[in-house]
Image (cartoon, rainbow, N blue to C red; front, side, top):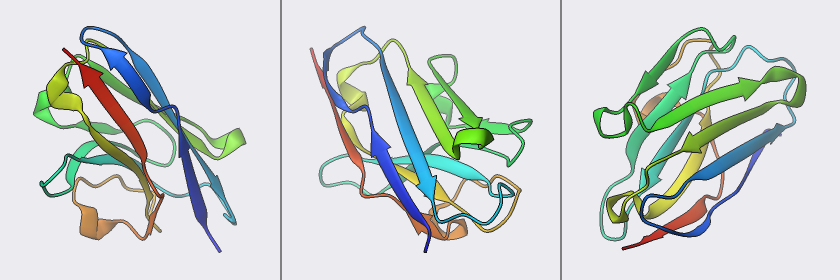
Length: 124
């Protein structure tokens, strides 16, 4: 059974940085694209960033381009999200997702497994 465990969330001031991590367990191989989504209070879950199985292809939502970077370490079955220049609008629960395909996608329905989420709060 595949499980995803996020960590790294917290409270930071505007302009600060955070690094989220997501460790996957129960995988039989590394041919899985992974992604980060986020959900702000009262809003729907939206795409943040995704990465192909080998890390060569990445996608970003327009609102994080130039500020966030996604990466992965297949030896550790992990994906990361480095978040810089954070603002109050980035406050949300961030979810890690994994799909049974090596190709990265940008929509929630494409992903087969989800973590429980890690809360990120940015104070102004």
